Image (cartoon, rainbow, N blue to C red; front, side, top):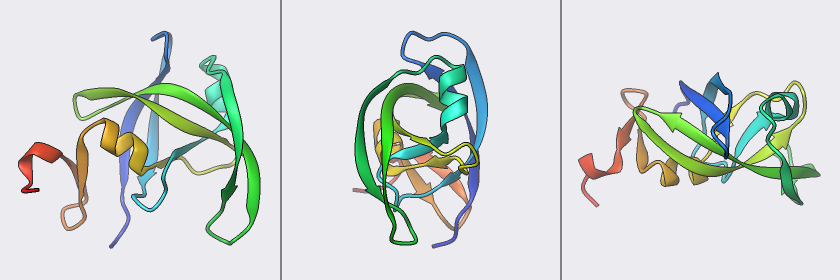
Length: 118
């Protein structure tokens, strides 16, 4: 499957300031990954940390926090990983499931899950 980018809005759980983020859609990534400075700027607080295996096989500890993600007219709370400063934003499976969106890889877009047969 090819990859594509989407733009979404991001805010802390209290609904404060929002930021627009362009992100790679990656259903192979469980959680969304965002640069830690962006999350700190939105006053997103880490709630935990855990070990994560990166695509290159390295295992690293990262903080985890909760945000509100808004895309395609839908919004949902989602758990995200505080990535390095230069991390490419990734919209992962946990966020997509919470938003009830599925990937249409042929047209490179997100669709409401209700539009596809289960």
